[in-house]
Image (cartoon, rainbow, N blue to C red):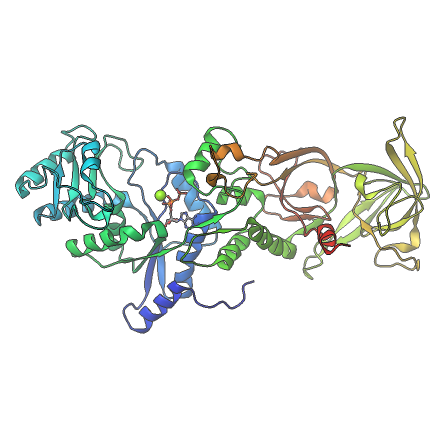
Length: 554
Ligand code: ATP
Ligand code: MG
């Protein structure tokens, strides 16, 4: 699928590191916090981290950054594993920052012993007041000069649960006048009497992100620790901690967060949409989550291709969701089974068809020579799309109109002879003639027509439900607008069509199938389907040839 691309800046660094012999192999990690489901932005990070060790010798760990007991859940851990696997990647080790709580505690004691950390009794308000500003230095905490013994004693007692939440913290002793605010005696540990999804009630002190992340990297001997740009100012602390602890020197590299338009990519915001029932769940097909994309009918190949195409950048930018749609359309065109489904039925009676019906062959996928074919029933009464007929057609209208001919896909050429209307003048039925010698694949009729329509035999048709999706938000960047981002939800993002008619081959659809409903778009079976009640989700439309014509001024 992907053509040759030039190296991104991380590949350049890695090639240099391998060439110089700095590393014989590389180790990366994907470090999600299990506080929500993964979204398309995470897919970028997954493809990058796992992609590098697929390309170069080495391996990738899946590490759950589970240092925040309040927001984390096992359900999220399971969904993250499923999503990474679905994307097609395998991790070497499954690790949890919480596996290292014991080691991290030891590291904290080492810093205390070196005079590089102290227990501070200041409240968070007091600490904020002493922090200074980017242009003014902070002031030292009155607890900064505690002795090693006192710090050790207090820290052990913090761990033993002697103090209430928020009453004390452990802080690194760096420099309250440091130009980098994050280096002004950052907090390493806080007291939190909370149940953790893995360690239960074993701990009541929890390490802060900065004191867990780099140390976990080091414990796992991660060579290239890749994160997003907002962590650039954290790198100094990352390096300081590793240096002072004299542990394995992992290195942090940053790349730009990937965001796509007309949606939000923040677990916290997506959680609001789920909790407040704006969507049916994390895997609602409108969600930019990996599970939502999967349910929508996206393939792992198409998501990987998207991530590959947007590549790795050093500057933040908004990616057009159209590119994601392009990638899935390209892939589905190659693999999707063609089927005929009529969304808005108009009855056609073939007046000169006297048989009781016959089964015609139709290819499953013209793009795939191995795709084979299926049988499609033809009979005297058919449905076509209501908007494939016009009583008074404009010029160049190649569909059905009085006296005009079209081909029915994989079947015969028909001509419309008569239009039957109800009292209100609404077209109810078309009376047509078919040309028996115009059968597709064996056409000896000598007739030539420009339009081909999809259709189903009424007697054989399977009624199904179809769910059409549009963008979740009305604006490109809902977080960049005044007020709440939820004010910008698109009220028409879901449209349910209950009375849709499908050819009988669709009755055997399974979740892993991908379909192109001919002329209507790409579809996938939804997991809400039940025997006798099939539901299909629209993944993406076909390329809109009509819109292109309009653009050309045709
Ligand atoms: P969110 O704000 O959605 O919770 P996060 O960065 O807090 O995102 P984490 O679980 O901490 O989520 O992320 C795991 C990894 O995925 C991190 O390395 C993070 O940098 C990366 N990541 C998250 N969002 C994006 C994004 N939009 N583009 C690229 N990488 C991302
Ligand atoms: Mg996070």
